[in-house]
Length: 194
Image (cartoon, rainbow, N blue to C red):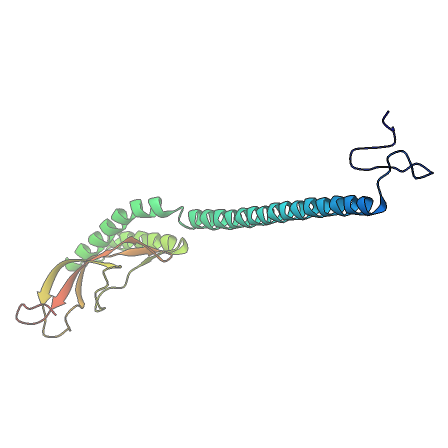
C-alpha cells in the first residue's frame, strides 16, 4: 500500500527511516535536480521578461517618435496653411503692378493711379506679414530653385547665367517657393552658352 506522504518528486521518510524512504544521497540528487529545473525556469522567465521589457521600450520610443513627427507635420501644415490663398492672390498683385507700370509709362499720377499703388503696397504688406516675400532676382546669378528661365540673351555687360530681366516676379512663403520668378538669363556674347 502506498504511503500518502509520498509524492512522485519527493519521498517523506517515516520517523523510523523505513517504509520506502530513499537513501540520503538520492534525496540530495532529487533536490539538486529540482533546483536546476527551478533555475532553468527562472532563467527562461528572466529572458522572457527582458524580451518584453525591450519590446515595451521600443514601442514607447516608436510612440514618442510618432508624436514628434505628428507635431512637426502639424506645425508645417499650420505654417503653410495660407499657401493656396497666397497663390490665388499673386495674379491680382501682378495686375496691380501692370496697372501702375502702364500709368508710369503714360506719365499719369492722378488719384486713381495713387490709389492702385496704395492697394498694391497694402496687399504686399499683408502677404509679407503672412510669410510671403518677393524673390529678388534682377542682377543675381540664375538659381533653378528660385527662377524659371524663359529665354537666354547674349550680354557683354553681365557674366553668363545672370538674370537680366524679370518677366514675372517670383515669391516664397517662408522658405518654400510659392512661384518661381520668370526671367531672362544672360548668355556668353556671340550666342554661346557659358
